[in-house]
Amino acid sequence: EDQVTQSPEALRLQEGESSSLNCSYTVSGLRGLFWYRQDPGKGPEFLFTLYSAGEEKEKERLKATLTKKESFLHITAPKPEDSATYLCAVHAGGTSYGKLTFGQGTILTVHP
Amino acid sequence: GAVVSQHPSRVICKSGTSVKIECRSLDFQATTMFWYRQFPKQSLMLMATSNEGSKATYEQGVEKDKFLINHASLTLSTLTVTSAHPEDSSFYICSARDYSGSGNQPQHFGDGTRLSIL
Image (cartoon, rainbow over all chains, first blue to last red; front, side, top):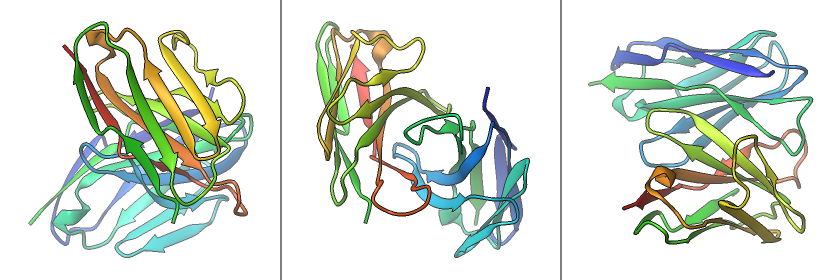
């Protein structure tokens, strides 16, 4: 069974304090790992897709990396507007139609 | 690009009412759409995969007769919660995947529908 575990469950940072979120996965044939951001009362917003170990993607203060067992979302010098829930999801090779398995998410709060 | 629109954003209705939620892909064609349910402070739970022109595929434990899904066109899927009861109150979110591009295209999500059954 495909599994995705995110840690920590919640993270509180001061503005400018860099940190990382973790996404560990166990899947049968990874076809893609996705990071999303979700604001309260909204649907998830797509951030990154990673396909293979060693791959990295960047967008503003966010950088996502991938190994064979886990992915990290690095946040550099975060701002209060980065506060949100960050979701990790995997598309496994045994699934059809692009079905995703989501982790529980990390609630990030950035204090000014 | 890749915008998904979901309506309504919020519904409050009496027990026993049937509620229809629409999910539209605005700038791309979506052969497949997905319907999720999200409880407070929890992650997304896939309910069903909606395929244009064919029957939806439901996840284990999801009642097909309670949650009717129709995907009649490449840009529209609907979820009808039939005879809704308070336990059906939740946040329902749809997503769609643009298959026209190369690589493993991501799912793009609507902004969800908050359903409250009194």
